Amino acid sequence: MERGGTDGRPGRPGLPVGRVQTGCRPDLEGVGCPGDRRPGRDDHAVPVAGRAGDRGAGVGGVVRAGVGAVARRNRAIAMDRTVVSEVVRRRVGLALVVLAALIPVAGVGAVAASSRGLTGTVSHAFNQLTSPNSSGAADVPGRLLATGSSRGRYWNEGLKVGEHAVLKGVGAGGFAIAHTRYAVANAGGAFVTHAHSYPIETFADLGLIGVLLSLALLVSWGVAAMRAIGVTRWTPPERAAERDGLITLLVVVIVFGLNSAIDWTWFIPGTAITALVCAGWLAGRGPLARPIGARTMSLTPAAICAGTLIAAVTVVIVWLTAQPLRSTNADAAALSAIIRGNEAVAFHDARAAASANPVSVDPLFELAALYRATGNDAAAIGELRKAVALQPQNPQTWLTEGETLLALHRPGQALPALERASRLNVGSPQIAADIRRATAAAQAAR
Image 1: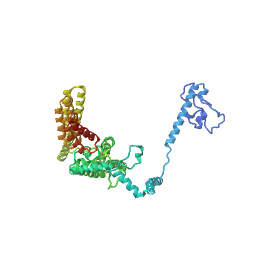
Image 2: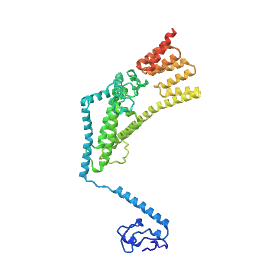
Image 3: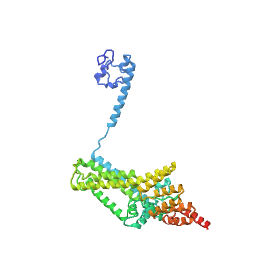
Image 4: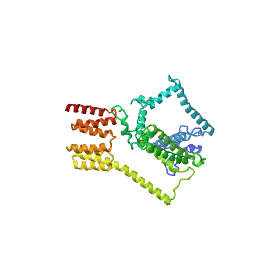
C-alpha cells in the first residue's frame, strides 16, 4: 500500500496510495480519513514516516498537521460572516435609535417622580450650576454626580471685569489680575486665572471689539465649513465617504466650541490644537464637489498682496510670541546666575529680560531682589515703584512694594501700599495678615 517518495529520492516515504486516491488532505496524514473503508485499508493507520522508522519526522508531520488545521479553522471563523439584507439592517438600526431615545425619556420620568418634580429639579440644578453664590462641588468622588459648580461665580466676575472697559477690555490675560477685586479666594487662598468661558473671558480681556471679531471669524468659518460639507447640494456617491469624514470633523469642532463656552477647554493645547486642525481642514477643503488636487500658483497683484500681508502678520505674531519667551528665559538665567554668585551676569540678564518685555513686571521684581541682595535698598524700592507705575491695577505690585517696605522696617510707608493691594484683591488672607503686622509695627514704633 505504500510507495517511495514523490520526489524520486529512495528511502523517503511518500503518501499512502489509498489516501491519495480518496482525496484525503495531505496535511492530515496519520489522522485518518473518515469514510475510507477500502479492502486492505488499515483503520488504525499511522504516519508512513513512523513505519519507515523515522519517528522524528513523523512527530514533525503531526505537529505541522495540527498547526495547519488550527490555522484553517481560525481563518474559517474569521471569514464566517453573515450577509444581512438592507431591510434587516434598517430594522436593527431603527431599533437601536429607539432604544437610545428611550434612555433620556426614562431619565425624565425618574426626575418627574422625584420629590421636587420635573420643573423643580431642573430649576434647582440650573441654579446650583449658574448661581454666583454656589459653593461648588467638593473634591471627592461624589462630585461626578453633583450639580453644584463655581462657574457661575467665575462668569459673574468676568462680566464685572468687562464692565471696566466695555469696548476694549482690560487686556489679554487681564481677567486673572482684575477679577481679584471681586473674588473671594478659594480654599488655601488660591484664585482662578480663567473665567471658565471663552465668550465671557473674551469680553473681560478684549471687550466688545474682541467679542465681535470672534463672532465674525465664527461666521466666516461656518460659511466655509458648510460649503465643504455641501449641506445645500446633492452629494454624489463617490463623495459620500469624504462627506461623512467632514461631518465628523465638524462635530469635533462643535463639541469643542460648546465645551469652551462653559469651561476653559480652549486654553488647553491638547484639545485646542485638535479642534483647530479639524476647523482648518474644513475651511480649506473648499466645495465638496470640487476635486482635490494641486493648484497652480496665482501671481496676480491681488494674490501677491494677500501673500505679503499674511507673511507680515505672521512675522508680527512670531515676534510678539518670541519677546515674552526671551524675557522669561533671561529672567530664569538671572536667577541661576545669582544662585551661582555671579552678580554681574544676574543684573545683565535681568535688565535684558526687562528690555525684551517692557510691559512685564516680573523682571522688575527680579531686579529689586538683586538690589536687595547686594544691599542697595534704595534701588530696590525704585524698581518696585516702576512696577507699580507700570501696572497700577495689579495688586501684586502694591503687595510686593508693601512687603519689601515692611521687611525694611518701614511700616508707616508699607501700610498705604498694602491697603491699596487689599482694595484690589479683596479677601486675600496674605494681604490681611501683612496689614495686621504693619499696623502693629507702626503702633509699636510710636
